[in-house]
Image 1 (cartoon, rainbow, N blue to C red):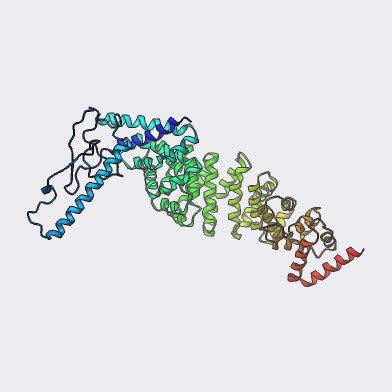
Image 2 (cartoon, rainbow, N blue to C red):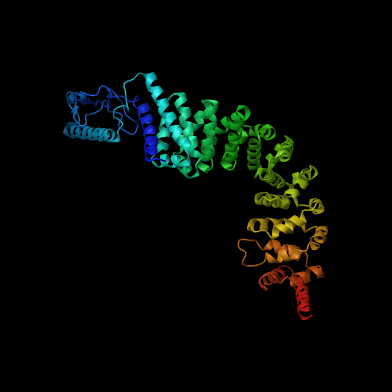
Length: 530
């Protein structure tokens, strides 16, 4: 990008903000005023401008480049003929006035050096002309932001975000505010610029929520884009929930355009991540709206609404029962069967996992044809989906009936394959699920038939594998030590960094079952001396 483009970008926003804000402030404060004492040679020079909120609002006119100022007579400030407080009060008054005058002079210097008063920046055109000019400036600035991310980064570095926020705070027309929200939404799409928006705090959130309440459909969609970036922090989520934001977002989910519904559902998903906002969802009766969107919205809207429901029920068993009774499983089945890719199923599997944490719903999930769906994605190519599926199986394997069903439907071979995965989280999820499934005796027979079953479990005991809870592979191996064949396989598993891993297992056997350790050591010595 040419250097002039970045200068034009910042200049456009600063001019727009300055023009908008130079109409709002009175010319006097506490009796203090300033006069021009020089002629204006340029006919386009402003005759009665006012100034941005960052400057003293008591300035009533623009000083000359010579900084020539003339104060009104003293009676403008002190109307009483006698000062009741004596000389000390008079001195305090004089000091106060002097400080104000110094502040005004500094403000004037800022204005002159900033270029706000240059020819063409401020004019004496009519109100309609001013609004037309502001519209052109905002359009041009927005166009520059839309070109590429580099323009956004340059503009943010030069301070465009505070200018945009103050423009939202001004008395701009709906058209200008719409363009401003669009610009803020554009900034929010650049990851490295999001922290600048978050730093604007409650003021920016307040204006975006007002747009959600009363803006146009287009402006609401852009506000949702910005809120999607801002709603990832606990403080912002709490502020959005307490200021009626959830109600406005649910209205968009009900009656917005398909694209705005998806974005609003994404914001709700973020908000539902935080316990502090979940009460707001209950107050607004959000569940029916989310279930409807999960069944009838676009693919992205359904994905976000299911993810939102999953976050809401994570720690609330009562809500799990409520949404299942209201048809959550039907919405989930519809989404699962129409998902465009396996990757989008991660939220659906996670939702099932969260539901399965309530044992009252396990039998319902198993008899509702979801068990085979979960097992099928254990072998998919998406790591996140495999991990969530293994975690769901661990939750489902909570009783003998469900463990038997899981084993018979073929979940053991893909879980064993996951033990050899590269990701630690995948190894952990698979070993945890298998440790629960193998409690059922029939599943142990299935496990022993798998060639890599014992070798893969023993390899997880290697101390060099970090952040892996060894109790789950130990549990798998201990469930198999009653079999002489399995003990021989464990001893002959020589690809596990010599005997470091086996030493860990022997220690575990000693801690949990001394008699099994004796049997294992006997088999070990027999094998080595044969």
